[in-house]
Length: 197
Image (cartoon, rainbow, N blue to C red; front, side):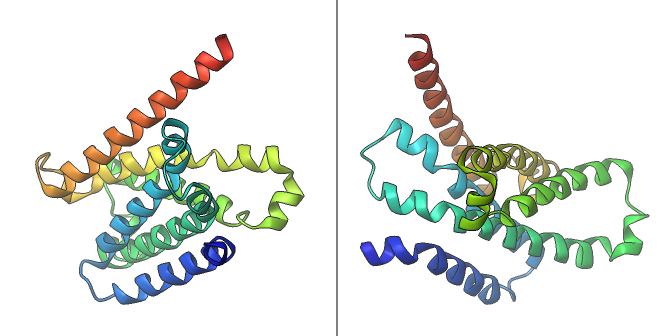
């Protein structure tokens, strides 16, 4: 366990890179990378509410230590998703001019979320924590919640798999959201109780 705790971040980054290469033949590739980005984003958001509600849930230290590498993996997969969407779906930079206003707005949600992830990934190392100071660094990385909300709307509005509310993708997506929001709600209630009493 001590070995895993020490090397969990490089292990996750190596595994994520290997996954990115291994799935590169699964078509449509932009959707494959979008599902991976969403899955990793979910894992990056889960530890705080999970361990707040269930403090004795196993692997706490490992999961929390891994979160930074999971977040960088979200950046990797969402970047690949954006690149292949631009290339294969939109038709490159010239295709941007042909987008409807509605589609451009939906796409800009994902683009803004990716911008937030870029800021976070570029500060996801120990020297950045020392440079900003732990409090300011943590406040900066709370922007992941804004990125998460933007990603959810982007995926729901633009993703063809979510057109049918009862498709397997939709059911998994919304079940996972209900679990995450329920845990966050319980965590927020606990926080309010601790502040009021």
